[in-house]
Image (cartoon, rainbow, N blue to C red; front, side, top):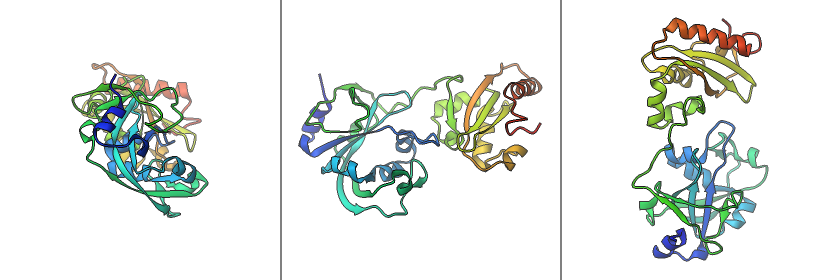
Length: 279
């Protein structure tokens, strides 16, 4: 059985000098370390460069091997970094995962590390999957204490498969950065969707009727201005809404038929009286 330790040893690393980091936190805004790594590598590196003091004790080693958890699960290798402690993090540091001040989130001292992505094992980045084991909550582990089995090695980076319309959930702010296959599927479909705000506890029922762009073209309006021209959303407190699909219309459905279905969902969810719909 080939293990990640075998690759580390082959690349010349002393196992005792490496720490394995498995980033899997999901922020209330729907953002994950996987999305940061896939779409904003600089933001991902910034996210892992600042740690709480207790975590810093566990991370005191010259090298970090980083992994992320895609929506479909598993543990994906994202690179090996040299890590050097540089001191306390500035108090104004903003957590790029949560878009909030780090001190406000952690409630304790934050420390900063200077990270540099190394060329070692770069050919495996985004392609190699390991078995993390039963200790999923232990996101910092030592390779010299346990070997992680390699469970998959793909020819190239493979985006996660579209989950289907019923299981699709995203934040509006993440719509422009969805995988290409997801965008194609959503652009080809029309129907009724639901916007909800975890922060304000408000919801809105809408419909996508255009044959040019389907759901995607409608949602991109929200991503660009926050309200898509809707009166109720304009009057509401600004929020990064979560979007889900209530019903997909048949390809032969007319715009009027889709709107009639939208009106039915408004009645079902009482979104005129208790939500943000105004018509």
